[in-house]
Length: 114
Image (cartoon, rainbow, N blue to C red; front, side, top):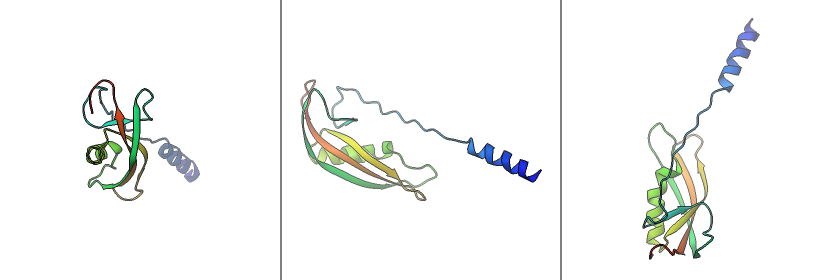
């Protein structure tokens, strides 16, 4: 009987999962720093370097890349970039930190002057 209750408890706990979706709405003609997923295919660009950020977010929710995007965009703009690609991110296991590496690009867009 105890084995059956343990089996039910284990199976019910193993079926729990959480999915979080945070959309990043950015139009292609929006001025400022764009967040890209790969190198631009139809625009000339130059890599300006890599930004490494360690960010702490107090509270009960683990930090996400979206929480750090304003800081990433500000740093990219201050280094002369107008686009960035998030290369890696890792959320701390027991604390509320996130480590992000992003590549800064200077892109010559055709749709507006940067």
